[in-house]
Length: 109
Image (cartoon, rainbow, N blue to C red; front, top):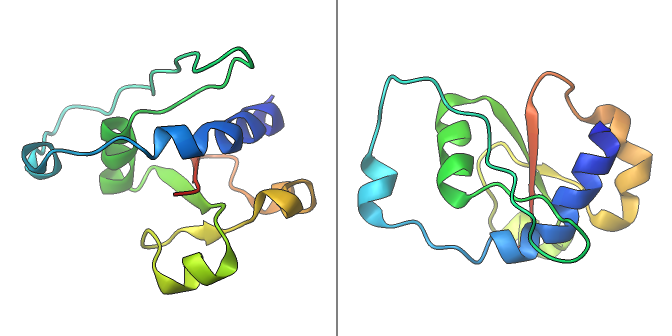
């Protein structure tokens, strides 16, 4: 199931990364527990998505593992702090390297 979710997240990361975070949202902090991500059907392939606000909350709480699926050049130029480089082409070969105790969030833009 985790493999399927990761593949699905990779498939929709381009669309999910199109969202823009408003400055006031980036400054907002709370001590409330982070809710589970809202998994929304994005298209006919039933791609699951995490909103940008949810991804930011997981990043701030250090409870998610971010995977950068862009090109090596783009990753080396700039990436989310602590993100793991894993192109979609090599996904199957590296699934065992991903943590099992955190939500894995993939992005490609």
